[in-house]
Length: 373
Ligand SMILES: Nc1ncnc2c1ncn2[C@@H]1O[C@H](COP(=O)(O)OP(=O)(O)O)[C@@H](O)[C@H]1O
Ligand SMILES: O=P([O-])([O-])O[C@@H]1[C@@H](O)[C@H](O)[C@@H](O)[C@H](O)[C@@H]1O
Image (tube, rainbow, N blue to C red):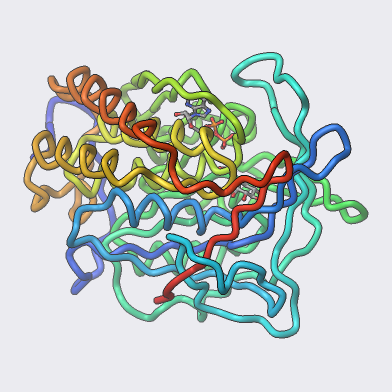
């Protein structure tokens, strides 16, 4: 899509030469999630943004769009032998445990924007260092740490390697209580990541994280996306903003909604959609994530329908949305039609139940990573 000179809606991105047309670099964690409700363990699942993200990128990227994952796990990693769409972590750290979180859920969140879980980091694997990244150019990068593993210098290296970098704020603003690992947030402006923002293409934050990101300041440096749970999301860029409607979902586990959103959004850009249209695909996969426990399984018919819609609606992918210099932010004239078609496709998810990963009220979703970089 050509840049629109009339609107202040496009931004320049670094352009390393020789990147595979649409190859992505995902940098973040796989982890063990223990889900607790009322003090009782109700699930032990594969988690970590890299797991949710690779699941959606596998499902929704255009066929020619490859990606690789850089993630670290310990020898205790519990999902190596079970079948799953997530990818095998590239790096094993024999001296460290796999990152793990305890997520304590309240019975009823007061509003769509209320925090619905309290997170505690129980173990942390090694951080991901700049030298852990493959030394080659990429079309795009996703910085999706959950436990402080994406160091500032690692993000800087990603920015150098990738034409466009999309960042989850949770990779930048989490701090962990020294005693119990409780997760809190710090202001982005006071972190070493702040100076890198103007070289980032998109920064995604949940509405809980948004105050720490400082949307009004950040939007002058990059496009900021604030996800609002069941209310969908909003995009803020320098000169404009847009609200993007959600998809209906029956929420059974909110874990991974934000991760799945970001991957859906990236996939939308890869298909050549504008940012506001791509956010529909983000909302679509966010809604799909909350409908299942752990890393979701997508019904093949649903995925076929989504791909048909994207083939039909997306502009030719030689467009410079993600693999070139410019992004277009505004909603297109087919935005509402795209929402309606995706809503139709979402119904196919329920055609027949996806392969079960539940076990009574204890929930196990053992998913196998299958390949690394
Ligand atoms: N209950 C829900 N119903 C429909 N969509 C949802 C629901 N919860 C989350 N989503 C989708 O997932 C996205 C991310 O969810 P959100 O809860 O904001 O992020 P996080 O998981 O980071 O807290 C939302 O913008 C929305 O598109
Ligand atoms: O739910 P979400 O915000 O998208 O992302 C989640 C992280 O916040 C959490 O730390 C991790 O343990 C989960 O597996 C998941 O990655």
